[in-house]
Structure formats: C-alpha cells, structure tokens
Length: 176
Image (cartoon, rainbow, N blue to C red; front, side, top):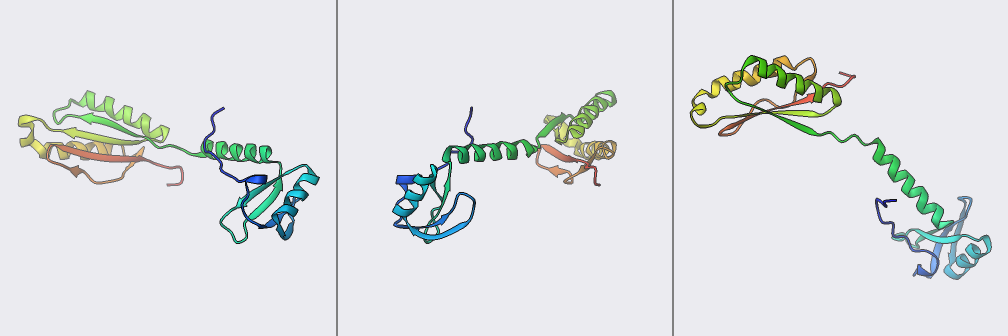
C-alpha cells in the first residue's frame, strides 16, 4: 500500500510540552493537564496520547488509538484524491494548407477530447514561405472555433507568436 503523505504526529513519550490541553477519547474537553497525568490517563484507557495541534499554547493532545487514526487519515486522503478531476490539455497540430477532410478528422478528435472533459489546444504552425499567408491561418482557426462551438467554448482568442498561432477550447459544462 502506498502512503500518500507522511504524517508526523508526536505520540506518547515523543511529546515535549510539560502541559497539554487534553481532549478525551469521546471528544470531550478535559482541560489543561500535566503531561504525566495525560499519559497516565491514556495508559488506563489503553489508548495513545497524540499531539494534534503542536503549535497551540499549550499543545492540543487527544486520547485515541494512533494506528486507527493514521488509517482514517489515509482513507480520507484517498477519497479526496478520487474526487479530483485532472483536466488535461490535449494538443492538436494543424498546418495552414490543411485539406477539408483532414480538418474534419482533427475536429472529430477534438470533439472526443472535449466530451471526455479535457481542454483542447489547436496549434497552427507556419514554416518557411507559409509565413506570408498568416491571414489564412487566422481564418482557419476562426473556422475551427465555429465548427467546435457546440462542444466547447473558445477560452482565449487566437494567441499569435512569430510562427505559431494557438487557440484554446474548454469543454462545455452541463450547467452552461
């Protein structure tokens, strides 16, 4: 099993403070007690004394089963990781003199990416003599934006560098 995050809690004899604010095993506030007294209470109940908030004055400690506590933290982290949606940016490269059929194939591929929830970046690259026809490139990217508007929203207008034009499209959500 892979541990996502290393948990550094002071437990029992590792606690350095002389007094601690103690929380009982049922979650009730016991109050500020000496460390030795808190350790005795933990021993009597068969639990561990765990320093929950070390930066507080005095530090907050709780009577719990430490291994069960670590397991619950790991479980919460896994649940949070499952709920995260990682949005990838898929890049589709175009050329200024692309044929209509090839463009349709690339648009269909982009639609598939948008349906899965990924962003799509269209990259239009000019080489050599093609630099003289940059207006055609702008027209091509505007056409792409119109063709894909039912599936995605053009996030940024055409970003123009010297030889590369970029168009980013984000997927439409159900709410919009």
